[in-house]
Image 1 (cartoon, rainbow, N blue to C red):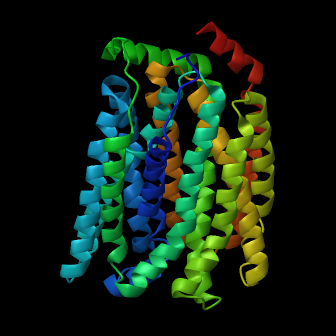
Image 2 (cartoon, helix red, strand yellow):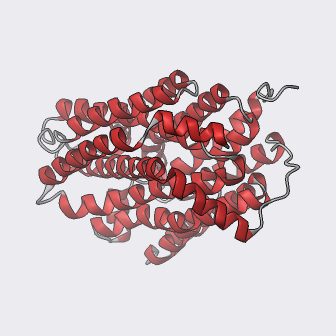
Length: 410
């Protein structure tokens, strides 16, 4: 069979999309539940935000390690044990919440273990897609669009499922992640066949030398993509944390109803992500245009979140525009990384991008918990300004001709 004409089963794609779906649920599901956790465990808003942040911080530092190990030993060998860790972390947090009088410390420990599992699972999917489809850029970009859609669909389901589970038992979301991880383990084990690599794996010194060379040659556009990933995740998770608190305290919307309201901007984010992934088709110039338009839309709309916080309909309209912009942006960022880094370094370089995204996820909720009382409007205006600065950075440093020329020389 010709290179670029690889046949991939639907079950393989379903298995791959299960990982971002479950890992996203593993974090985002707790956003609508945080006010309940504050009440049940007796913790502050900042402490509850740490339940999100501890998961993400653990992932930030270990993702590059997992990326290197996946380049060295294989994607599947790293993914499966990582999913097992995510399962174990959920059980620890769940049993602590169920059986202990003061479970907060053990919940954080369980979340850290889950984060370690997330570090070796979700980010490795991106280079695995590139491996499976080899040089078929259109298939890579469309499948990465599905991966990002699954990720964002997890965000849509998260507030609904989190609210439903918590309505039965407030700690049930912890156990649910373990059950879902078990399903993903089975899917990956049976249906994902990573292509055999006949090339000898790079030795560590050679690997380090090549990685340094990549960042030296491609660093300007790579760092630009990393900054995009960090900022949009910071804005998204900060906004979701704020919306969860605001809907309860200002609009008196709680429980399952709040979950469905939170899902509105996230559903639009998911839809935009799917459409963007389908439209990219491996076209680098199109990716850059999507990034630019999305940054303008996100930066303009995010400024108004604080000003509309007491007007529910306007708040949801503004949050939805932010969601659409971020949803369109993410598949373009995923694809530009995966398409333009050679295979033997793909896992490592894409892992740095995933780490950057997790920095945003980790920082968003605690920053918002600290600023939303006295500096709400200032914080969102600042986010908008940062977005516009990043817009100019993209214009300057993502040069389509230079990236395409560099690819031809590899």
